[in-house]
Length: 512
Image 1 (tube, rainbow, N blue to C red):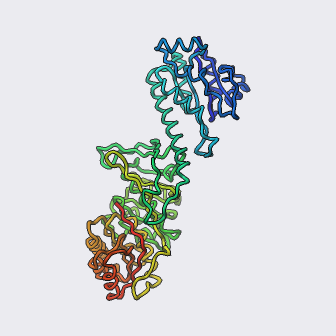
Image 2 (image 1 turned 90 degrees about the horizontal axis):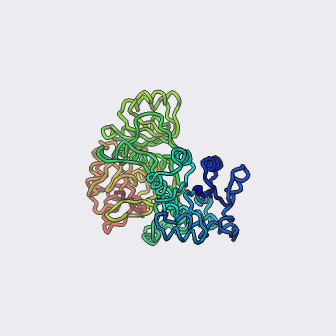
Image 3 (image 1 turned 135 degrees about the vertical axis):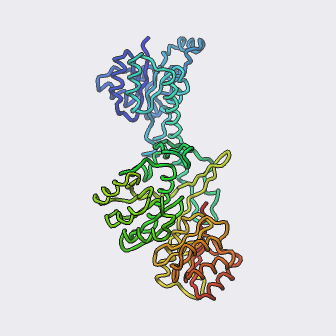
């Protein structure tokens, strides 16, 4: 008996050549619907599924392959005499290879794009991989044919590998359907939202797209995965123009830098990131001045950091950038001369990329023992209507500009965080402290007197006036914070005593 292959694909790339090659190798090809019509039109001998089942398609094509003559042929355990007796008694011939891929639900989500027959065939063949091969990706056709030509059979290891890909294919497909169902769930934009806005279950499907040099440390493995549910990010479109391969921390820190610089608006802006924390941020008249100001915030910490720029890199940027050891520079574009000059630095990774996406439904996932911690992503409330001045004095225009920048930066600094800004340049950043006074003290020490007349931002309320007093001593004349402490009145009074303008945002930005 000739081996039989069942071909039923939505993505028909390469299917005619595959079918013709199988026929040349002595296989019988069975097919349905559009695949069968295509093969017949191309002169490939093909047996219609309806001829095998004795039942024509029905329900507008919803039912074609859901029949014992198909699934019995796929699922029969060739080593089980009872199974083979069942096939013989019903006149069913075994099916040795299933080639199928599913409707493109992620591209055109809807009820009619939920594939039933295709999913059932793929899962059945993958379950019975001890005897049946299953192929879901046209890129696997050449290797499949090479192996069949060498022995007309697939090896056990090949069938196992193909089965894993098949179950991965159906898992991603089901995850895309679940994402579609969940997309109708409301996502709270208030602090009262919690688990109520999150789905009862999560169905995660990711595919590895990059192997990284190593993980957080050289003894750890690292890789970049992306959602397999037809989602891509700016990393998938990024171009690495030069430098070594990316490590885990290079990717992690670059993501932080690129997101922050793209949150700063359209004016020329630069960000320097070290260990996922900003150590320099500035907005200026041109991109080279923005970079110089950002680097000037904390030159010591900038050594070995990540630089992100929101405008084209010019030769005016290359000169100061070349004076500092930098791991990665990322920007939307590069002047040809600037790119050539940067490529001369063999260890500098030069990335060009589009802006990062901002979806309405984004989840932040962190591993814990036995599961995940899940939350919606913290979005920066840019100049929200909820902001209110709580002191006797209103901020000046220049103070408002510094307050707005300080608030954006502090939201992306590890908690407890305090940021000092003067003339739209971060001059002091205190990050990751166990108390707010120490965060303010570190920010003031790094500012070295440059915060005079500038703004101070705190990612959460000042529980005591001591943290505010540090900012006052550093020369800040305007403060932005969430408010909400039982001692707010004391802190407001301290600000009024010093003649400060203070703004409450009503929203905190803890970051761990």
